Amino acid sequence: MSLRGRSSRRLATGIAAALSVFTLGAFATPQPPALADDTSGDRALIETTRPLLMGTKDRVSVAMIENGRVRTAHFGADDDTAYEIGSITKVLTSHLLADAVERGEVTLDTRVGALVPTLSDTPVGDVTLAELASHRSGLPRLAPGIGAWANSYAASMLHRDPYTATADEVVERAGAARLDGRGDYRYSNFGAALLGQVLARATGTDYEHLLRERLFDVVGMPRSTVPLTPDGLPDDALTGYTEGGYPAEPWTLSGHSPAGGVRSTVDDMARFALTVLEGSAPGMDAVHPRWNDGASTDVGLAWHVSERDGSRVTWHNGATGGFSSIMTLDRERGRGVVVLSNTAADIDEVGFALLKGLSP
Image (cartoon, rainbow, N blue to C red; front, side, top):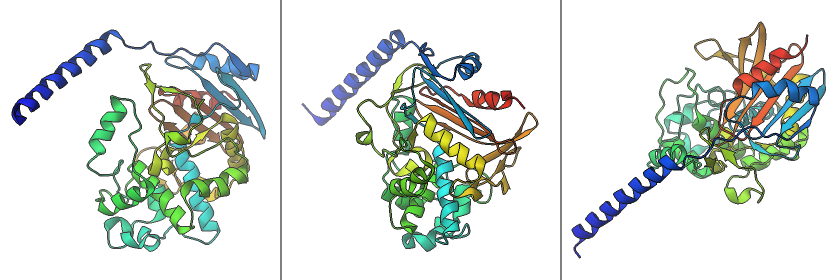
């Protein structure tokens, strides 16, 4: 058979297979998960939260912090259930930056090229650590590279982790990146990932060990991990679901882990929230807003600060292929909420509503 004939046959076979998958998919759409019936934890919090959890939900864990007291509630989960917290990881990374500033290791104005000499003669080499932490670096949302389109397809159609670059590859791709709109707020997962990797290099370790040593161990977050690859997950790791009900492969993010790769429990995240409210978390300078997103939200080091129902709310949310999360804090009144879910359905308004509903 000639090469042309073989190619034509492969093309015909591929088209037939694709049509078969499409046809089967049309008749085999999964049933979206429903909120788990079994509950545990604070009964009043369960009853307050349940009406807010409409739509696609499977397992959800909630924490409320008020006046130094933490209450938790679980739907189909327990204190040991670990969720992908997505972009709330950026907040943890920003606290590492502020902590490194307090230690005298870097400043907010330290430039990337000063810490990574191979990037010194590239556009990103002139970017400051503060710009990376506040989404004002001009870096694109996603790292450039020939696999960017394929990874986006894998995430949207195949429900796979699109962030496969290693730590070294993240740094390498930063050197090839073009800056657009530097100084303006443009949300960048790539910039947050680079920040974590640069900090790790500046302190002579890797990101996961830096986060464990300087934040998890200090705050008391023993169940929080940075798995990096699926091999780093336990056999019983919680499965996430897309909003349409498809099981999603875990997002461990590899070299992009500083932007969203942490898995944690609601108890651990509540401990972190409590230390922020008390002002005892490492790198507390991260919470102070210094810039604006060009609209109605002020920006600190990763943290966002917005006016909500007459209160200044410090917050960050997170989303992966199969999980969603939000942390909302009313620092003036010493109140906070953490909501973690193993479906990709948006839960932002749940976090804001619970924070508003706390009694004055």
